[in-house]
Length: 93
Image (cartoon, rainbow, N blue to C red; front, top):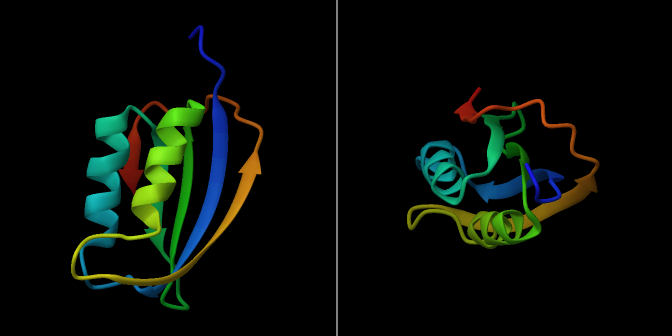
């Protein structure tokens, strides 16, 4: 791939479980061409690991800050990491 990949690790807090957050995150990420995964955490938050171009990840983070209409996002903790290209698609874990 000629474009530089980046990676983000995000934890999304609020009313984000039981509202199809993982499903819509997967649709958004896949539609953008980002790869990685999303999963529920025991504390009620949702965790996202994603790789893509800067533009793809910016748009994904914009979505994570809002979520689907039934969600209520309080905050997103975001860490930028080095990409390693380990993902081939975007999946729910």
